[in-house]
Image 1 (spheres, rainbow, N blue to C red):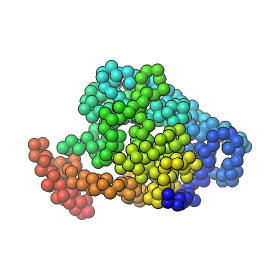
Image 2: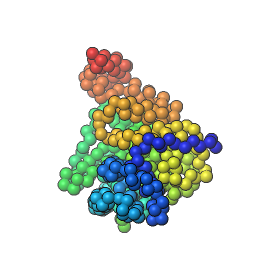
Image 3: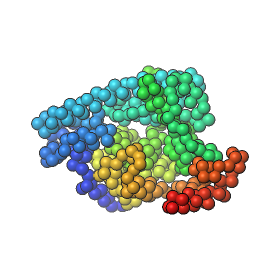
Image 4: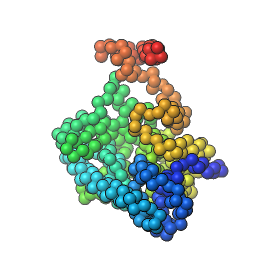
Length: 390
């Protein structure tokens, strides 16, 4: 095993450092030994902002109760408590909608896997109220998408995403479509892939064969198997730069609960995600003192990737708020490329040769001639680039 080099966390905001120390507490006695200096220098308004950005306030709520009341302003405790209670109602509402969707899809003979939401909260934290979720993420077979859309429309959902596509590139360039109910405001993301392509991942049949039944409701509700769940969580978190602590806290919970890590790492390697899994484990062990499985061997490469991800925590980056500042957009683009294996990088570069919808906008052609966009693509790209520069 290569020698471990501690991550440089010196530039983390003091508010985030306090949040991490609180999150590491499993017992009231541990909260009592947190460095008092952190409570004295913290900006409490920014502390609240950080808890909301990282979606970690439900998990912190009880831990704040363990602290000396004189160290925390009362309005901070009230605010976190209000956020915590609001999340309880939201998760209960999502649990009810999840049960209804499962029944409806089952009645229509559409296999359905829940990826996150209440099933993940119950799996990792043992309580749906201890993790936030703004929507329901479900996975269906790509062939079942028309039936899924028809069913959701019948239930009152409206499609939010209208994907521009050419030559069926939506099947691999994208991985989900969002639906929102105008009355209940519940949002459902219907996935046909775990991640956007081009990337290798298990097919739906494999995922369904390894499915597990969730304990959230009495009705049969299915979620990913252990190996598939780990692959999904680390690939999703890495794709977003681990910019929210909630995703790393999920990894921490997995490390504490799951076993057979040699098999899990071998499984990740099969799909080109071993280094991403090591990056996640590196961050979790450094930030939350997670137990490092004996079967997992650290590497310098994974440590470099983990250090790159610290940048997102230092700057409180919200990658969902577009357009991103230019420096952040450039950094994120380079970081995502560094996460790829050599084979993934080749596939990624070759994917640029596949036509884009913008090519059809630049030079409209009849649909039966769309195959011509393959040889024309370099010229159309160059034309758009020259116009943009001009």
